[in-house]
Length: 335
Image 1: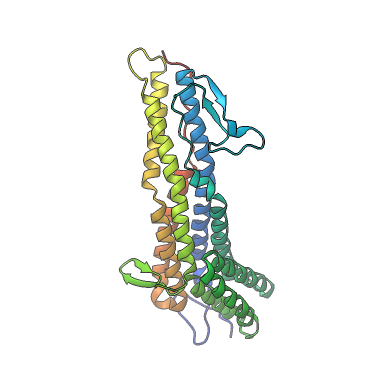
Image 2: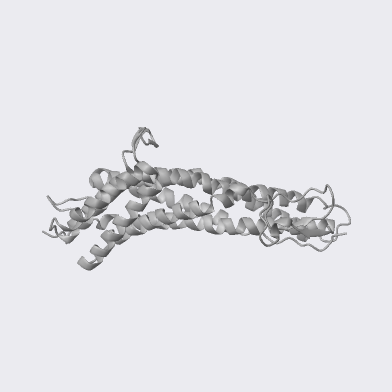
């Protein structure tokens, strides 16, 4: 029997539907996209912040500059290819943390795995016919397998076992399409969450020696997003200090420079408040709530809606902070 008259929080015997999850799974996907955008644009803004700070120092000191030796073709040096102050013993503007660059590819890979999984959940939930479902189920299969591999060797083994049995589950059972969509969603979410346990109100942990792919990927992203955020905070802090250093009586560009300092200080405060750890923690909680909801919709659906709303809001705040560019300061000498 097909569930054409499903209503929220009611299950007909032997018939389940993913329709009620559509909007909130969409919000989960929006949150994942916001996390990805936060990193990608934040990384680009970090490079711009460094160049802005560097140009400010050069302009303030009328520094004689040179091109770093590491810029020469075929040269690999400790310093990045950049301009440097060409005076013996003169301190150089600090470059961004090299760990940001070292971990860039891994971060982009992890973000792709997360967003592919979130979008595949949406595709299965919204599949309107058999062809759309077959395509969405294959996409979800691939995304959960990739999620497992990204979680490490144990995850790779478990995801391979999942992939081997997924097609049988999805296509052989001859269920009504609506029931298949729900069962496919349920199986994938349970594997991606793993045996996460609630040990205290709001505190989830993955048991030792267990496999929790979403938590594993989120934990890595917490560190990597934190590197970009902290690096931007440091260079914006240094820029703010440099902006206000010459201000005083007789400084001709006093108000424009002060306005730039205020904008830079405000962005620094925004970054300090938008903590990546809060976002990735909310991501795990939202996904665990989704797992509980697909296993027991009548009791747990409202909690999923609450948790995914919290995740989406925090992810948007992080995106807004990391994607906001710093204002270019006036570089005309002020006195």
